[in-house]
Image (cartoon, rainbow, N blue to C red; front, side, top):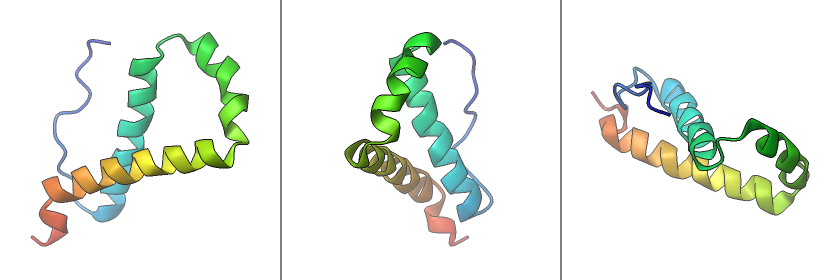
Length: 76
């Protein structure tokens, strides 16, 4: 992937920041496994896995922490 899709980590609100964190997480998966067929094949293995879902939540939380710090925790 060579397209520029992330011009900034700055967001207007924490809600937008959280949505950006989800986007970062999803994009990370797409960069790691660019083959869509393989992604779809593997999804059932983690979609019903408590450990897999917890790991996904941890990645989102880490990305949200990064976005929040970039936005000075929205303190203005």
